[in-house]
Image (tube, rainbow, N blue to C red; front, side):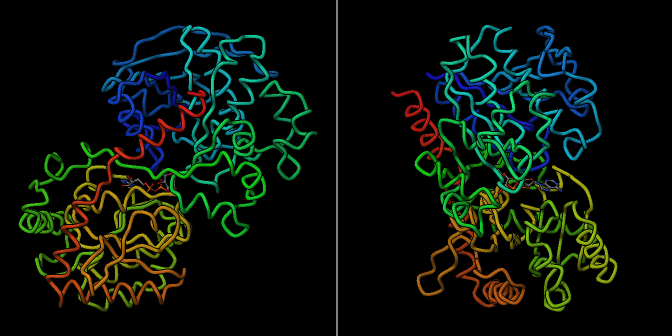
Length: 480
Ligand code: ADP
Ligand code: GLC
């Protein structure tokens, strides 16, 4: 049994903007089920207060001194499925409309990290492993080493830093060191956390963690190259001996078409033909699409950003919609992408729908009711959506990059093997070619399609194997 503390900026069931939140729920759950003492710490955002405040238990308040900051942080806790969740309250920093994208994000997450470390002393509970995630928690190893150097309880902690997306780096001005972090300029001068002319929270995590993980093996190789390294490839190569690639899993209890309360009809790998048909019909009705059981429904549920390859898709919307398909897009993001999908809906009423927003329930119904799920990402550290699609018998069509390459096995029409479709180059013609190929299988090769859906639904997308790898990594960190 290991004591593990997950530090993150978002996590379900409380708050989510992307796959990080899925992982911050499902991996702790998987480890807790294996007998570990797993806890999670998150900022107490406005949205969490509104929904969960009555269920939170106040632990206490501490005055946090970090650089020029001298502010109180109040701690709360609650328990879900055997995992304790801590929340750090600071009205000015966290009680805002959104999670990120504010001018003072550096200051906000510096405070989060520093107050998190103070909380451990207050609780007198110390993890053996502090598992940080992405730039918002990247300073933890260094803060722990420097600011608590005289407290052996902090010095015993081993640090794992998981990179979910290298393109979000938390790069700030150097004045952040004394002002918000309480660290000397030495760490800029020695180059260890210097990035351009400032500092990088992400780089600090890479340099000072005991082990670094990224969320798929392929992405762990890609980020060592200049092309995929987002200017961190040099420092990652320097730490390559300590860099692991562990593919994410999904929570197969939450994402289970056999028990999913959001679906009009539940189904499993034995009765999916009927189950998906009923769900497709209901989805078409709900979204105002022509009710046609035979048509291939293509879906995308995503942040609409460049990373996700949305512009490959918007380039080809006319071509796609001139074939026998229906399109469903759910997501928000860059305005160019949103506008293109608005145009799609307006010019193809009854055939295409764009739902601009974040809608968890609808996402479940789309995964169940669609036939093909598009993820033409330019890069993808792991990707959660393609695994959910597989579990719901919706075949992912992806670009072979990062975790998409590791989790989607393209259809081989000679052997019948595969659990999706894929293309290699990041261009819209190759994507379109593969969409047409997939549609031929859907309409003209029913046996092939059925075999694919069957093996997609039987694919192991759980945490079972990957949780073991995290355990092995933790053991290595602890010298066991
Ligand atoms: P990323 O974390 O890069 O956004 P992932 O594929 O890892 O991509 O995870 C995305 C997660 O967010 C999936 O669980 C997906 O279903 C969900 N999601 C994305 N956009 C929306 C949306 N608009 N409404 C509901 N769920 C969404
Ligand atoms: C990031 C990545 C995504 C990954 C998720 C969870 O948001 O963009 O590929 O699945 O983190 O690790």
